[in-house]
Image: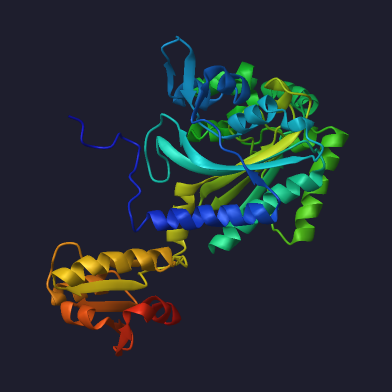
Length: 416
């Protein structure tokens, strides 16, 4: 019998799950301000979606996807990222036909990649992502980046570095690939096996290689920014200008290409403590590639696990409510039975309340109230029940008063 969780997955237990809830709540609140609506897609899709959308030359498609056949012998894949699914939903549901454009969507949920588990990198991980579809204006690029930065600020994160680049349109990249191949040809055989494969299929990905030898061999390689068309260059300059007007600092990183084939023009990453916290960019051909009309798009995704690590690195104390409003200490059989009814009435009235269920002594029940950080304790014995009253103790001041049962809820609420 298997009793342990699968490698690369985590149980999110009480004490930690509240942090997740705060991050998710913050994401939803920020998206609301930016008029961005939530979309929820299946956790598995047809494999072809990711092969076509993410790109067959990417590490994700080549090495990391969880793919299986269903009973109908259809090839399905647990989603390794959220953009392809969001765009598929946009196309399938014909959201592009709605009069109000662009369409602004966000998602929060689990993703799956088969890779070596390490800090902040798991086989089941979670992302908050935003996709804006239907507008090519560079102000949209800046708005999406600003949304991500606002999210980090609302979480309380500082020292986040924004790196941006332009990977150009297909026209820019066609010219650049030829130049890059010519530059890399003398050292082609010295590159790692993956980069040798990328040389013909997608040489720009070589610049993204994490192997030290490849990093050294590609030093001094031509930069994409020097080979942009006039249109792509103007777009990138406009994005930078908007970011400056927002007061958002950035660094241009000409080697950034991102790991997905669908990116065009603007690409960006948020870096915290040397690690990528979030990344994204523009993908102007993806909607059409997935069966929709020719419509531009841009988005980003944040790894929630990585956000938690960043919060820990920066020692950010999240404003998470702790404790409960009321703990019932019931003594005697009749009081125990009646406390169940009172407990339910309090919860219906919006009071966070709990009680002892194990028949413990009064001393043990008071200790339980302390462990739960109860702000008030309602003490009810058989004698008090017969008199129609209960004792209410303020756990901060130690003050204790007697309250008629008919006024108990009102009194507790007034002390909250």
